[in-house]
Length: 561
Image 1 (cartoon, one colour):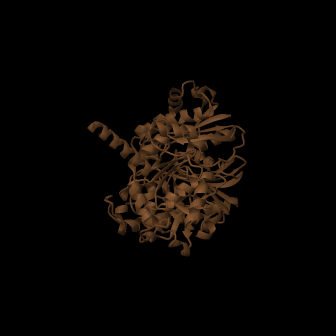
Image 2: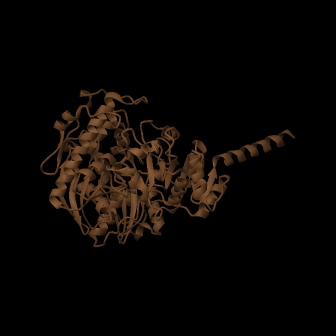
């Protein structure tokens, strides 16, 4: 069965292709359109489809729209209720629902040759759940989904056994931990439905001064649900103006809500385990990108393993919808091969792009050694290798890399990207060395979805990787699955004694992650980065500008003759 999954209604529009239960391709529209999150999550944009992502998924498999058996759309309008009945203040939500009802017609227009009757609606939280359990390596698992909203709920608890979902609990709106956190994000001066990760980072600079009051307002219930109506945040602190400063009462409020979120999630996960007794918990939904909370679930619940979908936000529902339809059709879903599900270019294509841009480059036999030399000399490296990541984390396909031993490199990378200085960067660590450096979190941790404590005797050795609270959001790197990156970290370790690099996404503030070579060259030309790796090719900034200066001098000399 050939199933194209589509997420379009709210935010992070995306497409994913599953063929005979195997994940072939997945990509977010923002990587093509170069518009962060693809669009804003407003009803007036609900009709917009991930047209470029859909087209690419089909090209990747050599398919035409008419070849598809099903297009799985990750929202079921038959389950939706009017916003007023759900206690939501969204006077234009009916427009969103109208667009969802007409999705088959929109899709057939965007995919000429597609029969609208082949479009199938998949409930939003079922799509999230499938993206977690069916994409994971486990045939049997409990599942926990939390986000802002779906058709009428904000949460699902259940279990998957051999591709079949049993729903155990759900929480109806307006109670929503995701909307609670979104509202706080806006109150703290950040962009709602976009900058929630900044609140998580800011929380480390505060203390949970308002926690006891929040415990009265936000709490789990005995039936597996919760109470979480959005309070008036001004009762504690006035709205923050994003003027570049942080801390004080606003950080205390962030810390209070973050801590209460963690506590409630632990309670919800314990409830699920009481019902199932399963060994594994799979998680998805935007709230599952809160890696601090994920680590507490791993530490404080009876589950032996917690598996989180790398594209846990709405983008992942395209993948989940396709997997769910495949499973409903009797196919056995194969575990996703990793997060590198997007576009890639051959070595020859990358070289052609560099020549077309008149950029001097080499293709060294010892690329890892030369890049390690740059990093050991405290250079910043733009790293572009293989298929791009599906989801918000840079995992060694599209990354900015630097030396973790220089404490100034945290501020330096934030300056390169043009972002707030309270935000941490993440360490990449060789998988077989991770346990000696990091603790209090699951290992391996290949998707950067958990927070670990940095062991005290390592904190002074890798200060740029350590957040203000002594933790780090790590990615373990196995050279068997990431050979070029693994060799580079090994070479860096041989030169410095540190099997760690610091990593942040290859983009600048407000822009999507780099996806194609042109994006990488544009960033390299405009940001103070010392080297660019494009597959096996290496561009050194000093050489590029030296050649440019020589050419300019020759032009000047010629003009004077």
